[in-house]
Length: 529
Image (cartoon, rainbow, N blue to C red):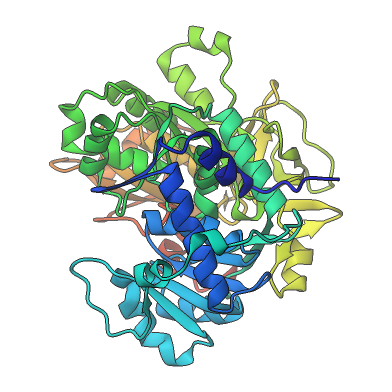
């Protein structure tokens, strides 16, 4: 008899072998694996009593707290499907997602209750569960979470039979000009992705994992499952505050965390980073957007972080590439090492096949020059977009998922993204990679953050423009930046226009939203996207 591949089984294993070990630290609260498991079973029993059945959908809008961790296990082990919500999206998108997902119940943090109150009358929910938070009072009608799970007997909960190909989570991608898409991820896909997380990020029993990455984002990339699998410690973090993260590094001897390059940038530029010695030397997985080599080098030098670059998309659960570090790389200079670490890398052990193809469908030459699109197939690719066969067919062709990311393959097989297809700048017939230009700009000592976009030009069709956030006390002009760029890259690639801003638009997970920057300059829907 086949035993289903589901990450939920790792909770059973952790409770069996590590009952007295600390499982979760959430501020002043701590739970052993036995206590954590009991709270999960209480939630499952309460959900069953409330009428939630196998195949039903339950939406969850919570920050990185122990409640969120409990939901991933407690909802899904009933056979129901969890719908993690991005709590920073607009109320209109929340309304669309909750209704489109066919969620019967919503579990929401009191801090975000006001957003739900705006749209409550338009939601097709049957029940709302509210997690109480000190300092946040809500008039939203619902049942208190702790009260909800307190009045059930966890021992009466009976696990249901799980098919590894049934949905575990329904994760929505951000909408730009169209409605968000519901990515259907199975038990098997989540299991295989978490196995990659464990193997390639070197997760072990003694790891202390800090949840800096939003758990709603691609299920915390799989960390919510992988840490439990080995009996590691989950350290919850309600909000990403660099100074607090640096304190938690030492307080709990954090050994592993994940986050977008934006989070790395926040950490290395926090004043506390200059005076704090991080003795735990954490490993940090980064993804979400191509990290600049200069940023990686600073993170390793200032904080001693061991940066591990991974790549994927929500549609692939999400890992499909990993920057495998080889012993001979250690003989290279710090600058060369950082350049290598900025590459997306090679296939992971358990995800399946990934390659870069030309428009004709053939794999590109491994020369680091021929540009193509990253495509993948295998164990982690989504089942499809929920109730959207048309967009599913556009994304998955002949069994291959098309990422929309443009990349090259180096002679050693390492894939390196040059741009999103929609972000590539075509100026006078020349292709200009916005990420390549950003990589040069990040080496400038006065630049904190930057985004390079295409803007219309009468002569060249479009030209690169750099939108820049300067470091505090920086004294540099637009002309200085233009000169710096022309001195450090081919002139046709150098930004023709410079704009200084206070901050860049980002998603809740730290990814740049370049389409919001382009809106000022383009009327064409094609380029705004």
